[in-house]
Amino acid sequence: MAWFTDSGYALGRLLFQRGLAALYLVAFLVAAHQFRALIGERGLLPVPRFTARVPFRDSPSVFHLHYTDRFFALWSWSGAALSAALLAGVGDLVPLWASILLWAALWVLYLSIVNVGQTWYAFGWESLLLETGFLAVFLGNDEVAPPVLVLWLLRWLLFRVEFGAGMIKMRGDSCWRDLTALYYHHETQPMPGPLSWFFHHLPRPLHRIETAANHVAQLVLPFLLFTPQPVATWAAAALVATQLWLVLSGNFAWLNWLTILLALSVVQLPGIYERRLPDAPLWFTVLVCAAAALIAVLSWRPARNLLSSHQRMNASFDPLHLVNTYGAFGSVTRVRQEVVLEGTTDEVVTPTTEWREYGFKGKPTALKRLPRQFAPYHLRLDWLMWFAALSPSYAAQWFPGFVAKLLENDPALLRLLRDNPFPDTPPARIRARLYTYEFTDWTELRAGAGWWKRRLIGDYLRPVSRRDL
Image (tube, rainbow, N blue to C red; front, side):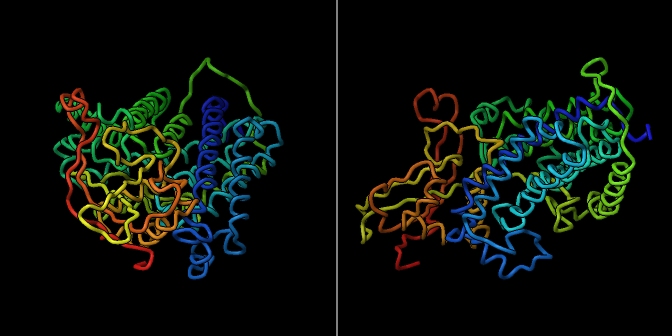
C-alpha cells in the first residue's frame, strides 16, 4: 500500500495539525466567553428556544438532548482543553486509533455549538473550520505517513475556498471587474484593523494592482494546486502571501489563517524535515477510502454551485457541514454606515438631554480610536452590528433584545462591549442613530481629527424605555 501515503508531506501535516488545533482553541474560547449574552438561557437568541422549534435532524447537536448554561460552558472549555492538548502534540504521542478519536471528538464538540449558534454562527469560516476539522480526523499521526487521498481532499477544499471567492466576485459587483473594488473595501469592510487606514490611502493605481492580484490568486493559482511538485508548493506559497496581506488589512476571524493552513498542507520541501514514516495499516486505509468516497459524493452539489450563474456563497448542503460552498464580498459596500447606541438617565427626553455613547471593542464608534487587531479572535456582536447598519432586517431577531439588555445593564452583554457609560445605574432610555463613517485623510489626521469622521443620517431607533420594550 505504498501508493497510499507520502512521507514527503510530514512537515506540511505537522504545521497543518498544530495550526488547526490553535484555531480550534480560539474558536472554543470565543464560544466560552460570548455564549451567555448571545445564545445562553437569558441570551438574545436562547438555545432552548431554538431547539424547541428546530428538529435534531436539521441541526445535529448535543444541546438538543440537554442544555443549561453550565453545561454549555463545560462543553466549550472541554473543547478548549482538548485543542490545547493537540496543539501541544498529544495526537502524536498516542496510538493512531486514539489520535483519530481525539480529532473526531474535537469536531463533534464544535459541530454541536455551530448547529445551535443561529445567526451568530452563520459565517463561512464556521463551516470551513468544521469541514477542515473533519478531514483532519483522517490525516493520521506519527505512526503513519500522511495519506495522499486526504491531502488531495484538502487541496479540493482550498480550491473551493479560493475559486468560489473569485467567481462570486466576477459574477457579482462590477467594481471587481473594473478593478476599483479596493477604492472602497478597506474603509467599508465589516471590521477594519489597525493598518486599514493606511491601506485605504494607498495610491489608486496600487489598489487596482491589488484587485488584479486578487483575481490571479483566486482564479488562476487554485488550478496549480493540482499540478506536480514543486509547482503546487509554489502556488500554495503564493496563496499564503495573499492571505497574509488580508490578515494585515482587516479582521476576518480565522478565515485567512485557516486558508493559510490549508495551503501549508500542500507544501513539500525536500531536504527539510525529511522523515521516513510507516505505511498505513489496512484498517486505516479502508477508513480513509470510505471517508474520501463520502466526500466525493457530497462534493457534487458544491461543485455544481461553482459553475452556476446563481452561485450561492457560504452555504452548507448537509447539517454536518462536511462539504460546503464558500465565497466573500460578492458585493462591495461603497459607503460605510454605523449604528451608534446612546443612553440617557433622563426619563423625559428634551433638547437639552445628555446622551452618552456605548463603545464597542472592534467596530468603529469613537472617532479618535485606532481600529484594533482581534483576528483570529471573533467579535460576533461587532460583526452583526455591521450587518445591522446595512439593513434593520438583518438584526430584527436580536436587536430589540439587545437594547432591552442595555436598559437592564445586563452583565453578560456588557462584557461584550468596550465600555459602559452607565456603570452605576441603568439608563432610562436608549436610542440608536445611523451615521456614515469615513476615514480621515493625512491632513485631518495630523490636525488631530482622529482616524474617522462621521455624518448623521438620522434615527435608527427612536428613544425607548424599558416600558416601551
